[in-house]
Image 1 (spheres, each protein chain N blue to C red):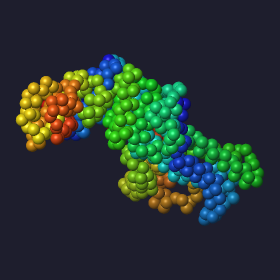
Image 2 (image 1 turned 60 degrees about the vertical axis):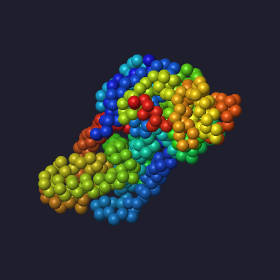
Image 3 (image 1 turned 180 degrees about the horizontal axis):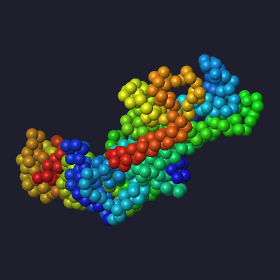
Image 4 (image 1 turned 180 degrees about the vertical axis):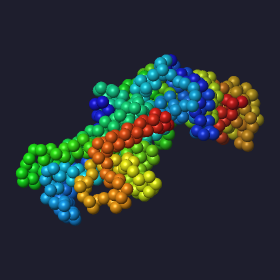
Length: 293
Length: 269
């Protein structure tokens, strides 16, 4: 057992930020906490990291009741990367290593991993957001912790930065580390996490393996000039879960593990050319509606 | 303890503001010292005597107390408002520092800075004293060395007060303004106007900044002109005695640190 949260409650005045939340994170999991902005993700992580005081409920790290000792063994990136702006990357990491009591921090190695070696002597204040975020990940890794707590690690990054950070997280996860990741982006959780808890207004909606919780079916919109042949092929197709008509043609929900490419190939093999093929990203909003129903 | 001092040193060493304040103190103390030559002193107070033993201790101490207030009192403010502005207090705690350790690291650094400020004060005093005293008599040299621990306590106290105000309001500009406003207006008005008129008595001098100031006062005790007419009439001393000043300011420092500790323990960061 890495983390156990029991009936956690945190109120800000009349607003209940975390409402009776219980969670369990086990070793080796990449545990996603998914929820829209303001759903209590950061507050929950703030409580278990000792910076926010809960009103009731409890939590324990590593099955022990020693949160202060535990924090030394966890790498954390909560909300924004927090460093001393007048200090360079190396000096900032030295401060982190000093607090963590890491005797010989592998600062150069870490900076290489996050691709900041060339800028290691530049002041933190001169860094771009992506560089700051990467430095924060290096800082979280400095004591080679068993557990990483990451809150919106790709927030505010450009697409390239997002991919870099996600690959970094996957790379770390492969080493068998436990990662707790809060995100409001469904596809991020889907791509990275093994387990997910979905929270809304501070309350837990559902929890379990990613495959079991998040619907992996893809939604595709298609259109063609030959409506009758399309209808016939749709009836025969084996990997369509359901379909409904739209202005341009049909909206199809594919069965698990099938993609738009399979669909396109199927029609092409059957001598039907599509004039319109659109893969629809399911919004978190829709996903929530499905889960809550 | 050494670990916490090292941690604070890692944070302070590259800080430009810290360097400027330290440089200012180290330059200003010996360079502003000759100011006395241009000051309009009463006849009883020989200009020569303030540069020679034993009065050089009190005069340099008085000058130094202004510098410690402005250099290190402000530094006390910045050492906490920076941590709030950069969100590094929050990050330090998440990284694994306990709240008590965080406070301790600051207090230990205040102690170290005050110690260096005091040692430097002694060096300046001895330098000026030995070069300006015609007849060195050891008893005269040592007569006012009781000011040395007071000087240390005063610097430490100023840093704690600055830290406390910075801790309460979290923003450096506002905190510095409040520190100045409280020191030069609020406390004086409350103490000398309101409190004095309602209940004149020794308690009038027991306010935090006043007790800290009286640790190293301008040596006016013997000077009649310093005595406010009204205060004399009501038989209220203008200054605290050394013992009183040490006891009262130690109490205030204890109360301030205690309050910071209690708030820090409970506060969401």
